[in-house]
Amino acid sequence: MTASQTEHPATTRPPLWRDAVVVKWVAQVFTLVVVVGVLIFLVTQAKTSLNDNGIRTGFDFIKTNPGFQLAEGIDTSPATGGRALYVGMVNMFRITFVGIIFATMLGVLVGLGRLSGNWMVEKVSTVFVETIRNVPLLVQIIFYDAVITQLAPVEFGVGPISGWFMVTQKGVSMPRIFAADGFYQWAVVVLVGAVVARFVYRHEVDRRDETGQDTKPGFKAMGTIVAFGLLGLLIHPLFGFLGPIFGGIARVIGAIPPGAVQLALIALAATAVVIWIRRFWASFDGPSGRAKLTDDDWFRIVFAGIGGLLVAAVVVLWPGLSAWIVHSTHDFFRFLETKFEFGNWSRPLDGMRPGVIKPDRFTSFSPNGLTMSRAFAAVFLGVVLYTASFIAEIIRGGILAVPKGQLEAADAVGLTKGQKLRHIVLPQAFRVILPPMGNQYLNLAKNTTLAIAVGYSDLVQVGQTLYNQSGRTIEVMAIWMLFYLSVSLGLSSIVNFWNVRLKLVER
Image 1 (cartoon, rainbow, N blue to C red):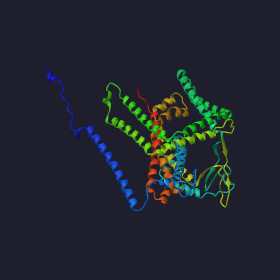
Image 2: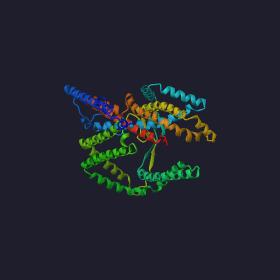
Image 3: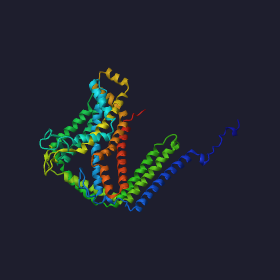
Image 4: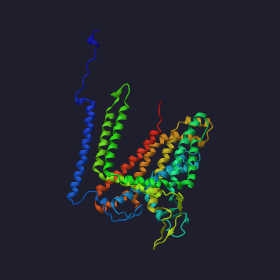
């Protein structure tokens, strides 16, 4: 065999129009340019049409007095449109946060009930799921609102438990527990207890692994937190020394110029991008080196750099952001300074019973109790029951996904039903349950927009009132879209974080 025969033929690159890498990049960049161009065209056309019809555009309504009051919220007489929208956001978060908690608890109970060996429990759970999830949520909310409207009016001695739990046509009122003046100092003691409990938990887990004994690490960690909580009732006034410290921090932050914060944010964004790219690049160190880099990997690197530039552009073009960060952080530490007072023996928690007052011709609930208005109660019942019916099926499906052999092994070693559920079934089922559960949380957050049907002052209802008065429909809808996009991405990030943590790591 001659030398010329042993040589490999020279490889030639295909022409650009046939190169898969070039075609993919050109197609994606072209699509991006087209999408951005279409958006710019639509925005320009909308602005021109509005100007031709004498309709003003802009976000100046955020700084002007809206001229209306809200039915409920942290501020029923907002001074600006932005404040009104903020109250609507807080009201939406109230429904979402409480709804997720109660829908999860009810869904877990109903899901376990559908797997129960008790005929009555299984049938009741099945009827609940099949009925609630097949009736549109909007119909349910309107139905609950109509039912609450037909209840007894607010009056002295109303029940079912007068002075403790009152259900009327104006809503539901019950006792409330709130943070008193000594709460923040007591919370510091509990936080220290949580740190200690973490070390206790790790120590007991290591001891269990070494000896094989059931050291009950979770029980002892929880006991540590409870012990510090009880101890905090006696020693929490000592932590009032933190007040002057927080005050000093507030004064230092208040002296920082917004321009320095802008530079710090730009530097932070640049540093974060560089660190991410370096770590991503280092992850390809190995025998094959950079040959493992795909087009998607290059896109990640490019868009990481573009993301950093966008953050820097927002910081530069929006100087009010830096000023808001300075003022908000300053106000936060000033708030903490007022809550920490050395020698303050006030109790950490306090409570009040609900009541009825008649300041004028109309009787209403007193501000002492925890009151759910008629609209809040209707939306709360709607989103909780509706979401719980779907969560129940997710729980049932996740438990049935656990291999039958695992249950047989648990029975073979003599585990009780409770132990089998806690140690065998739920830990494995949770990996199956978590992704669809996150989707239900997202649906619950977005379904709160139906509260407008019963007049609940959430973001959509407040925004509709604003654009009816100011004519800024596009601007208000843009705020809606940005807000719900942020909420959805935030919930998705939390769910994805725990999903990654629960992922099985193969050897």
